[in-house]
Length: 178
Image (cartoon, rainbow, N blue to C red; front, side, top):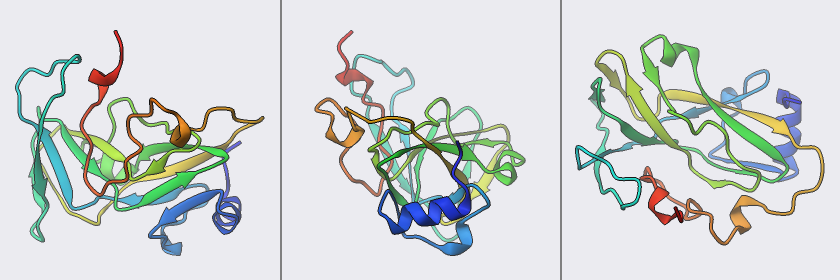
């Protein structure tokens, strides 16, 4: 079941969902709009290695915006810090962003119950596009879970993305055993 605007508001009031900062104008019929933070990052190496810690170069979006280019993966971050304690958050791009040829996630659109952080975005584009900090970039849709949860994300010993951040976080695949 997807939560409606009234259910999202109720969940916020009961601290089942946390959105900071929260802006009532960003609440849709059954979603919440999130905004692009001021930090981007790109990988420094041309070839990434899943077994190694790939380093990133941080970029800051100025008032004049930043032009993203096709063929480059940009890691972005949401302005909003979120928590979910009894629902599964899904992050989807806004249609207005998609119509500019921008994708905001390659594969990681679903969060886990217990995820407590900003969202790192995996941004790519079809054409060069000037983007701006604070622009609406995506929307969170919440699905209620059915049943009790044993292993909340924020309590997992091996959770790789628990440290609260205002900046995008690079892949931590290298922490996996394979």
